[in-house]
Length: 467
Image (cartoon, one colour):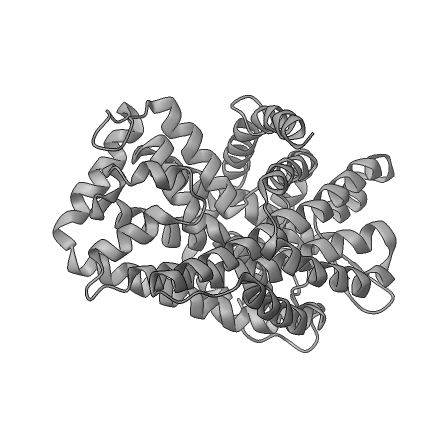
């Protein structure tokens, strides 16, 4: 029965995530929005960092739940995940070095998508009877497109809530457990999975049951620390191998348009494979167009939607153009992607290739520790962020009283994911993650005139950039 279901899920996933549905729709939506915004996300990138820095505090008269900075960190908590380590390795293994170029393209145009998502989330958000600021695709579909589109909003909420238990909970908890146990085994220390699952359950419970404000507070500390530690490790490798960086970058650009022949353990990849896996892994990592991030941005304490839109566009920039690029350059500089061991990494979801690469070129060793730290902290932050997403979807479907029961249920699922075999869960998670993007992309295209008008108004009338 399981094999039969997995077979059908593979067919559905290949269709939804294939070259004729989600990938081109995501990419060309980003292109359309970028042109409509007159390339504002690229032009105003320095301004966005200024707004982010000032967003650590908020004006007492502005409305919302989290400071703009913490809303961004909550979004990044879910976005910066195993895709930054495993996803990059998978893209290179399957699509060659050229896949990294196409990951960059998804991020560059995904900045426009995230800008529009965050802007609409604040523009059409609501306040629940107990004071929660709720928003996201389900709300800008209902409030922006009208009552006749409520069915589409409900579909997004259903898909988003279901996806939160898979891609945002069980798979992340499992990744944490597997990697901690594996690291301990390298040092001949046998650690029982039950111990890791119990500790993870307790840590998640303490944070999650506290609600969005506690999650935002933890994410505001954890996300910058974990990103800085991982990036510092990557930069250490690059600084000590400066002479190899030009060749690695040249290889990325050359392979993006010519493909890459078989070499060593690498089986070779055509241009089409570089595009397919680069775009797919890039979108998996930065989630531009998925509709998840705007749920976090809707909680921001701001006086104008475009301010949070500026922070929203930093999601794919920091996630893909910074963190994923560091991972990719280390992998290419190390040369491990052409070794025979790469074939084992291709079938392993635990970041073997990235760990091998860091361990081979990091001064003084320690690559396995760094990658394990990255995977564990990135995965834990993803659990925090996706709890917010799932909770807000539950509130939309069942009312504001569903918040606490959802958080309790979400916490109870964490140890199940830590101990389970997840092939079926992964397939379901991928499917629901893809399906939740479709209603969101329809809404973004139909509501794009609203974003363009809000943006023109903001830049025409705003004289000061205080948050």
